[in-house]
Image (cartoon, rainbow, N blue to C red):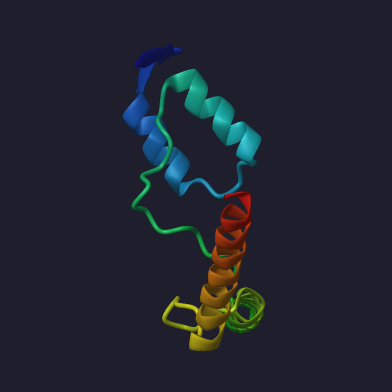
Length: 112
């Protein structure tokens, strides 16, 4: 989509390229510009911008917080680093499943 601004024409590609470089726009302003000029959203494969910017100390601190949160989440959900549940948790889930199955079988036998 092309729009004439004054005496020049602005293309969607130009707007998209400019928005990727711009750092001062709010998310709402960026949305409005994308909608007005027909520029699509940034690529899904593009990396997310770093909150710390060029500040290494802040980057290290944010990484530490992220690692602590991931560790707490894994402990809460019972996951290991490989993404699978520990053997004890799997055994508990399996035994509770068999208990439920046994209860259903007993109830069906009583109906006969």
